[in-house]
Amino acid sequence: MSALLALLWPLLLSLVTLVAPAWALRPLDPAAGVVEVLQMPVATAQQPCWRQAEEQIWEPWLEKQSGYRGRELLWDPERQQAVVLVGWANQAAWDAIPASSISRTEARFDGVLRRCLGNSASKPLPLQRTGSLQPLLANAESNASKSEAQNQ
Image 1 (cartoon, rainbow, N blue to C red):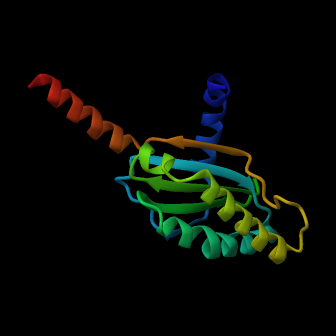
Image 2: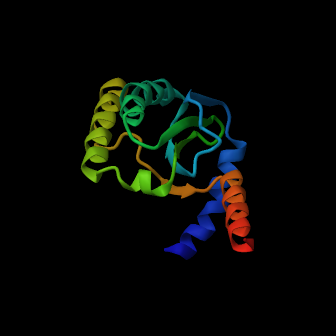
């Protein structure tokens, strides 16, 4: 699995850096310790429904989660792909969210999408890739703190 992720991350990173335009419902905090990365197909015609469902379902839910540090929605019109970046204070904060809460929220999100798109598929916009990245700034500060502690 880790070998597969190692092969896929460069592609995902290229998508993130080439994707435009971006929308920040709550701008991603540069001090986030970990960034959740989600990629899904979103055609031009689906984009308004996707944004509506994100704003209506995921954003209010995320705002209630301890450790949430903002997010950005990115969309590549050429590839018809969306990338969602969700910032978390740290991995522990993200991992502490009950899977049942995520599943319920995902079901509500899919319901809004189905109604808006007129689509009966259980997953109108299925996730293609998921994972996490650590911001370089957070790593650099963490490594500097560790080095400082070791030198004392």
